[in-house]
Length: 369
Image (cartoon, rainbow, N blue to C red; front, side, top):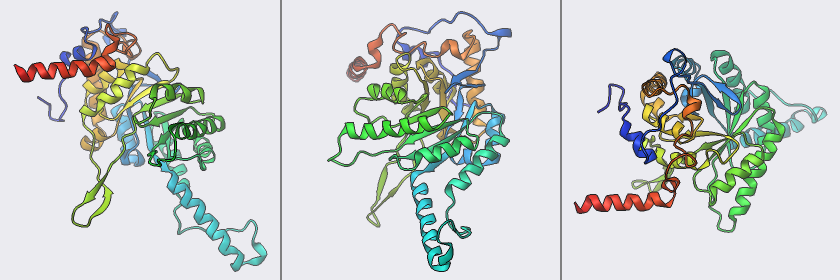
């Protein structure tokens, strides 16, 4: 049963099932019986582990203020897309080319007023400054792309505009049959190395789950300079319109069931990579936030839930987490983070192939009963 906000109450069975070994018993309560919700992410101290990830809400100042008031620990601004940057560069070159005919004596160093073209980076830099003035929590800028391109230059601009950190949103579909996995990985590693070398602010990398050797890539990304990993990027799959026989986008918001994939990788990577971990996709309820932290995430990022219920829903997630911690006498988020990760559970194999076998066995037993 859910409450009026569509949030299912915390259930001990949810967390017992996650560990397979019963509930982890913490050492004691926090000061005055109130748990400390602060966490460290990308070297930043956040007041809570609930982070509003990139969405239209984080690109709107009133929504940003509402998220801040609801208790989020940080906000990730909507992504600045590589395609926007390419368009911007092309438009500048086009206008500079036109200037040669308009004013031959001012060919070099002359550019007309560009009121009519898409000033993507200009608007984004303004958003960073306005967001920093509007909220008290860290503001994380986001770059979305697939190639090295101008990421380094623009990442530096975002940092100079005041972003507390940068999230590189690697949205790459490896569709070229002539391109190897090693080549694809190298390109991503080169981007991360270039951006982290150029920026003084911490950089997180938002990945898809489709890499052939994700754990190995994770360690390489950290070696290349990444301060954090965001798992996972949720690819929006194309659909076919049967009336027009055209291919187009179809947006479907996530559900809590989708948390299981990032949950597994939080648990597998916690304690094995020297980087912050952010769980994203499937964070809708306080149960989801709690599971993500127990598995090893430093923060739980949410978008779909906020789009469904509004910015105030962040407060439901924060207070729900605090209530669960207080009832079980957890003193802090730090204390509970990773306590049900693979390195800490009684049966580490539960996060790997054994989970697959046990699932099939349980289903078969239920079906035959």
